[in-house]
Image 1 (cartoon, helix red, strand yellow):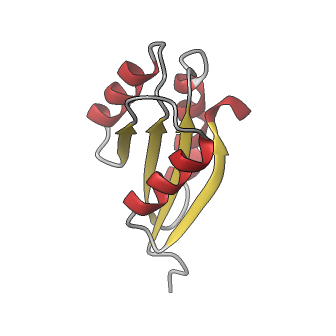
Image 2 (cartoon, helix red, strand yellow; image 1 turned 135 degrees about the vertical axis):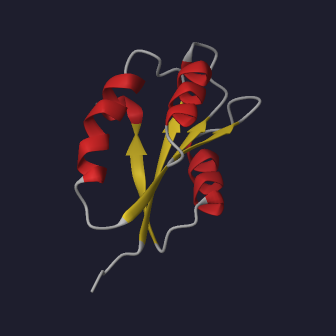
Amino acid sequence: MKLINKLSIVVSVYNEEAVLDKFYETILPILEGIDSDYELIFVNDGSRDASPAILDRLAMDSKKVKVIHFSRNYGHEAAMIAGIDYSSGDRKSTRLNSSHL
């Protein structure tokens, strides 16, 4: 019996171009190793670097990656709330920020 049918991971992003690919490469094998479906939701909080393009590429490469783009920086809390609202999993992890890598 699965304890979690679908896990939603919400990640706020603000000018994280230097770490996004590494973050994804690190978290992907962990998510693939769990016995549940998952979605990885990145919320771009108005980044002015290459973060939006990197996130769009990740979403194009995997249907499990979803991206929300804010038009400007609204802050970490607003980004996390938007990600939670958009998520479809029965369990959610919301303490992630890609700069923690």
